[in-house]
Length: 284
Ligand code: AMP
Image (cartoon, rainbow, N blue to C red; front, top):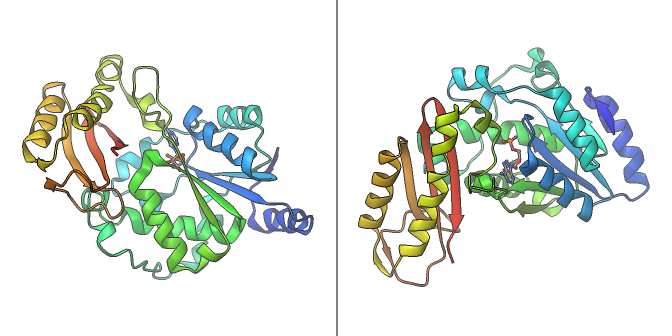
């Protein structure tokens, strides 16, 4: 694996590889890697000739400065894991490399429409603008053929798909959404899980079990009572629920009365202590 910290050097190397007609697969991350990230690397290995992973904890997507400061940094362990998964290139830019101080003008605005006002967008104002800002820049730097994202961040996948359209990159980049990897007790793997205390970690799978309960109990008709039950179950287990929503799988608009046909996804964000967990389950 080759490690690059500077865009110029990364570009020179990738231009050479492109001349060999290599297909470049790209997995952007914020580090503190786990098996979920590695599953993306492996999927990228199986579908491209050269896999680039980036690690950059993007300050502009954190609406809570504390969350940014507490985000785990485990670079040495990350490098070992990437080597074991067969990653070819690690891009590890500094903050100045991503956001040069001399270019600190008004950030671009991405017209995401209603998508950034719902769910994560509602509870984390500005989050998706920050995500688009960094992914736009990373895509410019890496110029991949295939972009690999995790369904764990369902709404983020939709936002980035929209970003590809807005920037016309959908013509040169295909998006592959990979399934959510879970611990054996159902908890979705996440870099934030390592911030849970022992007792919080024991309670954390309730989020997935509640999503499964909603999936199993869903019947055509009004959905309000089922969602209230879900909130109660999570609250009883010690979660502070931000949202749990049954939503249209294609536009995330809430479904208050299911016709038995519409494709749905159930999505949830909830705090356990200071740690904010998100999860989702596509239903049909
Ligand atoms: P992050 O480092 O949290 O920004 O995540 C980097 C990429 O890994 C994103 O595309 C995530 O959706 C994906 N990812 C994170 N956790 C998981 C998981 N448990 N299973 C699959 N993909 C994941």
